[in-house]
Structures are given as structure tokens and as C-alpha cells.
Image (cartoon, rainbow, N blue to C red):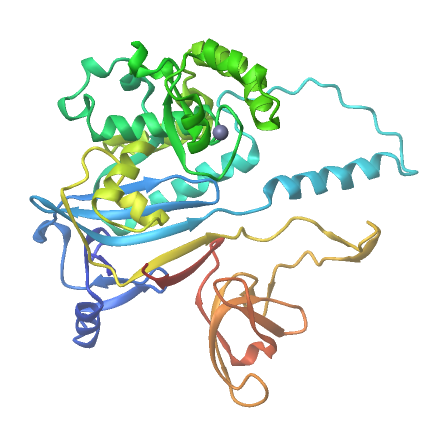
Length: 445
Ligand SMILES: [Zn+2]
């Protein structure tokens, strides 16, 4: 799909690549932006156009956030845009490296530096930089899409499971009571609470079963406080025994596995009684993102991870970040049509570094950077096209440029891989100025 703007740069409904090509050929439109590819109609304004409702759906993740834009027709949803937002990696590592360099400066033979007192406070809503960046990058993408698409609503995955609904399943909606969704919510909750391990023997990466600690046959309830995760062998070994009976039997056994089970059992019983911890409160970034999304002025719908998983399974979509995003929230339509041929991959790469002194591997100064950032009209990160007439790199190349004082530049593709090296800037032309992002696409799964 191609993004379309009106005469006054306001977003209209997106169109297909073919239609965009025809509009450009007939000179009814101009190219507004190369990445993401956007055209601007010269003869149309927003008021003359018919808009349908578009919903932006987000599945926030630690490394990758999935995004999807669904056109909500009656009864069905059409995915017109799918994307993966790759968050900038290594922020914590880089900040630690910077702190070490600063620290070494203190112990050097320089002027006396007064120690700074611990009198700095963190503003309300402060997040660690690695987490804060994730929120900002997601909001940046949302704002970018709001300029390109007439989005009317946002859905986001807010929590892994719904603690309110788990505690009071009877007060909630009809389909929830002991239904499919309830099973998904319970499973997600138990996986989280028991850290994806068998509660009795701590086995990992094995199929897990939901275990009633006080067995159903001995009047054990279906309440969440009577449920735990167990591997097949523990579940079978325990059978219909009460925990105390099993503990007695285990303590008579000489087997190492049984002794381990006996050792873990009291802790399991203790943990069962612990109240449901509020997963939403723990995840500060999700709240920060939610507040920022609300600030866009659009209605924001929140969904749980369990619901996403259930709906993705129902729609028989494979496990990818963008399909997860399609299935976020209770308002997901019954039928989903994927109208995209590819997935946009937008990677946050930053706008360069502030470090003026390059260090060797021992931490000694190796060289100093120039104050200048732009050379011959190019700046590192700009998207360029190079027509190289001869030599090793003869041909046409498109990518991000690394500008050097010498005038011989390198070009990298959207994954950061170098595609040519030491090509003269005379053969290059700027397509789009760098904005701290690398735009690419990949085939749909
Ligand atoms: Zn086990």
C-alpha cells in the first residue's frame, strides 16, 4: 500500500501500488516522500474525499514492536499496513561505557573536581533510558503514521492477562465466563506466576499442564489459587493425592527427583496463597505508552496478551509481531483480510554519537572527531542514490551514507550492511535526509 496525502498534505485513504503508479504517470500526483513511500494528490482536498475508519493496532515488545493498520469494513477487517518497529539495541551498554569513560576522567591528573552530591531527583514518570527509548520510538512511529493515514482509533496490548477478570470471572462479559478466553487468560497468568517452569521439579521447556493442587476429585476448586503448572511426569506422579499425602510419600522415597519435589512442595503451597500481583503496575513502560497514546486525542482500546494469543490462533495466523498486532483488543473483527504484500521494517538507529574522542581498545584517545557534521552537502544517515560509472562498485546503489571529510563515502543498506565503500560523493544524490530511522521491508510470513 502507498500512503496518499491531499493537496494540503492532509492524509487520505492509502491506495495500491498500481493506482499510485497510474496517478504519478498521469501527473495527478507527485512523490511526497520516498520512505515510507507517500504520494500527494495535486487536485484533491480532504473535504472531497470519502474516508473509512482505520484502526492502528500495537503489540509492544522488548526488542520489536508490531504495528498494523486495519480498515474496519462492516464485518471484516482489512490489514492495509503491517510493520515491525525494531527498537534501538544496546542503550544500557552504551550508557555504562560512557559512565566508565567519565569515571576515568576523575582519577586523571587534572584540576581538582569537586564531588557532586547525590542531590539530583528524578522527575515524575521517569523511566530508565533503555525503556524510555522504547516508548519514545513507538510514539514516534504513531505520530508518523498519524500524518500519513486518517487513523480514527488505537488499540494496544496493555497487559499479559487481566487480573480483574481472573479474580471475578462472574461479573464479566458473557463469552468470558469459563469460556475460551478464560482458559487463555489462566494459562498466561500461570506461565507468568510460575516462570514457565514445572512448579514441583522446576523442569523447563517441556509441555506444561494445569495442575489442581487440591485435586478436583477431593473437592478442590477451579479457583486460580488452586492452580499451578506441572510437567506431565509430576502431574501423573501426584495423581489424586492431597499435597500432604504426596509430601509424605515423597519423603519416604530415595530418588533424587522425588527429593527435589519434596523440597519444592512447601514453597509451592506458600506461593499459591500469595495474592495476585498486579502485572499492569509492574510494567511501567506500558503505562507510560498508554498515557502517551491517550495524549494523541484518539480513543485508545487496551487488550490483554491472552486475548491476542487466542484471536491469533482463531484466525490461524503465524506467530509474528505484526500478526499479533492485528489481533490486539476485543474489537478485532471476525474476519481478517491481509491486503499487504510486504511488511515494513522500521529500525530506530539514532542520529549519530556525541563522543568527540575515539578511543582504542585500551581506552586511550586514538583520534578526535571534527566539529563538522556535513560534508559536500551530505550528512551521515542521509538516504542517497549512487550511480557509479566504473570500478568494483559499478552500478546503481541506494542506501544510507557515511559522510567523510575526504569526499569518499560508504553506503549501507537498511540492515546496516555495507554495500559499497569509498565511493566519490560526485556520483551521489540525496533522496531523503536522515531522521534517525532505517526504512526497509521484508516478505510477509
Ligand atoms: Zn515436574
